[in-house]
Length: 103
Image (cartoon, rainbow, N blue to C red; front, side, top):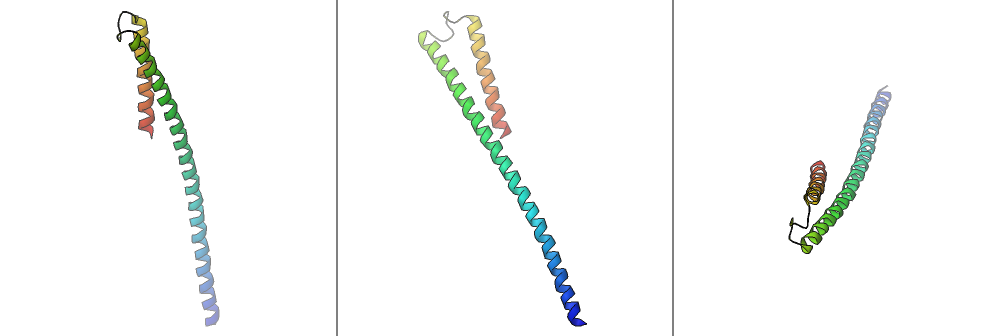
């Protein structure tokens, strides 16, 4: 009789360990999925950030080109062109700020 009792105790312990291992495996798989999702989000944000940097660089080059041809915001730039340029720069700044704040 004591032999059966020891056997049952060991069997119960093994069953308990099996349940714990199963729970840990499930948590591990969840963490792997979350990690993969986060890595994908990070890569997407990095690509967006690079794209925005390129756009900003392009806008800065446009600004430099216009500044080289005449003094900045001189008579050669119409009011409409200045406002359009200001708006594009502000949009780029807003996009960059948004991406920086979301990471």
